[in-house]
Length: 187
Image (cartoon, rainbow, N blue to C red; front, side, top):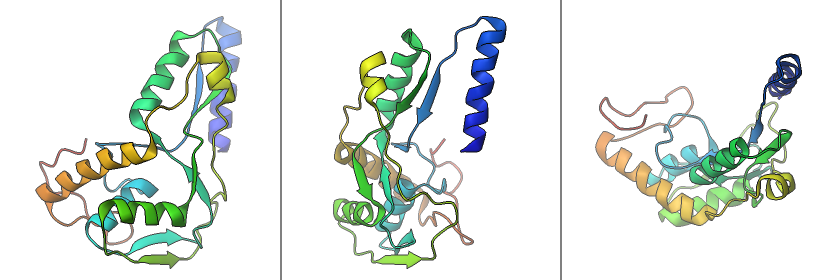
């Protein structure tokens, strides 16, 4: 997070020094088709694990919360920001909030998986809450997400199912992580 703050400061310094326009988007968790199955993100991990009926791994007790936006909403938000006149930082994300444990159960239900939830040690620096305040996005660039998490997940699940059908087993993260076989369209 410190790196992001430094980058924002540098952008605004550059703006003032060189009299140029800048835009700063604070992007929250984004998901959708064509995500890499080994990117270590909650959505890809949970989907890959459930589609293979493997344990759904949660770090900590699962009470930490996250918000997830579909990729097309992010693209629309970035476009609105770039085309608009507002030059302050804008949060782009979906304010619908889920506990990680409930989100894992939700994906398990959507995939009709037999996976069980496995709780692992809490990771260091894992925030207890991530929920964007998008009031400025609504007010200044007339943007808010329109794709429901359920709709986005169904599309993303279908994509990952096709990746698995083409490549076979995938281990999403950890020491035994495996990438899809060569020729699989994940880029």
